[in-house]
Image (cartoon, rainbow, N blue to C red; front, top):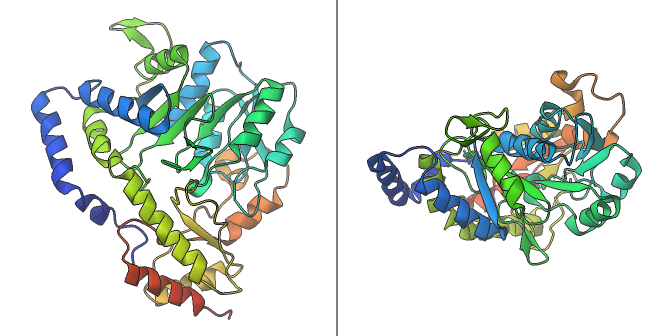
Length: 368
């Protein structure tokens, strides 16, 4: 069976470096908010092309703390609206709700799966304060057009870059397009820790200071609490491991792009809709997502022929029990995407022979 993702195999590539980093942290006797975190934050900020990176507990916290920091700055208030794609992972919307704000859902483009900038304009109201584009599956949203809209309406832009480490366009990387960006370092991400982790990038010094405080119980100095904060910190061990893996990220992304290009060039089946292959430099290819009307039958075919696939994501956020009552609107494009998407295996450790087998199995699929 070709696994969808084998994290052991991914991390085994760097086992010696990871063990050395872990040993260094253990022997240091310092495990929270130390030199390892500072070094990773500086390195990741430089990688993304921003002045600051703040390590936090996870990707959800990265979005939530960003919104909360803007509230502390007086730039947004309870009940303000945040425009977000309707087909995102639920975390994007949970961050908005948790921050006391109101999510406004917008349909995506079917060919990119990212928010349709043409529909954003129609959803802006006097209460709109933030645009939250999601670089879904590793492809950058149309940030030039989104930023133009934000500038015209004096809106803040928060990138959800949880799946887009290293995605690039216009000579800039994900995390450097908005006023701030939230990243996840969940183990399965392109840049993944060996546990939960997240980060926020920005060029706003005051914002960065507030985020650091909010994630440290609202404290700017020991036992002095300016804000009603939370505990959300990227620990020394995960920071050290991420520093190791950051050095290899570009090479891994290059391998992802090569696999994706192979899939696009050679999967030829009218029953399968392939993703849009954008400029290779702009797509991080966190996931390779196709669509198939008979998803159940197609996934059974893959499994029967030794290919493990997954669904990202089977249920649209507005259809989740947790968000019932959030909206009465219909989102047919979003619902179609969630009903038909299938993620094929794509990670840097898949061999060329395995890629060829996935292609052969996809091409052999016939409708029942």
